Image (cartoon, rainbow, N blue to C red; front, side):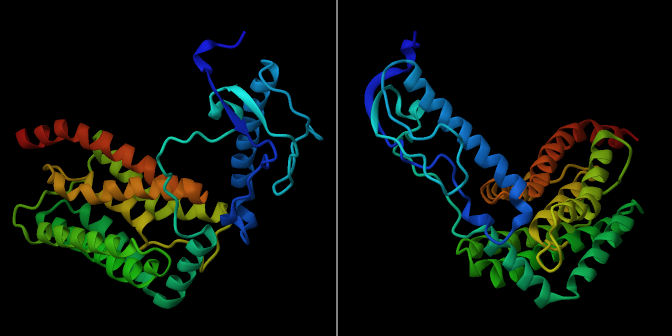
Length: 317
């Protein structure tokens, strides 16, 4: 007996629609086949279950030439029939009146931008990485002068990402990159203002939850993220190097967790918004290693909430 909750007006189903969908983004990048296979398999199972509901309930009959799962690009031929269930349960997309956002570029375009960037700015990647390591050592000095120097380094990073990567390279495949460039440059200005303040929030990489979380994020940006890209077979020059938005944003969130005094919340808006945007892009493109930024944002929020207690402890010290 079919649950009456799902019954409704009949809708025509195109059973000739291919069961599997080949992501165009993976063309030329065989090392992402395992991610593509997972997504394709999930899609196959979902469609077949939906079609089975219609057949098993007796609401529709159709003649299929093959019941086996087909490879991407093959066609599952069958007659269109009607179904008493809601369109979504029978494999027919539901028309909600809303359009799903799609990226204006493919995965191959995305990595091609990395290649052009890395080849054009070399050896800036080494300098940016060295600056990040220097910023970590400065933070461990736990002085106001070294703290202001670290904020200045963050200002340089965000200016670089906005003016160089977004405006000069990413904009070639994504018009929205000009907006990202403006936002990143503005974030650079915010860090520069912090660097010039005499009472800049002091950075202390202590052993509190926030301090340890900050260390984890810094290590994730400088060590774990490059290793994940190596495991995913991203080789230079298509490998996203430090100085690009994903690893540099992770590094920024880690550094900010070391602030003993509360960081102004407006300083956090753009990095966290970028984490959301990057998560959407990672899912759309199948670049699962970029989900490290999503996890980092969650860790940062947890550490930021816990930092209230740390701020009060240092205030009484």
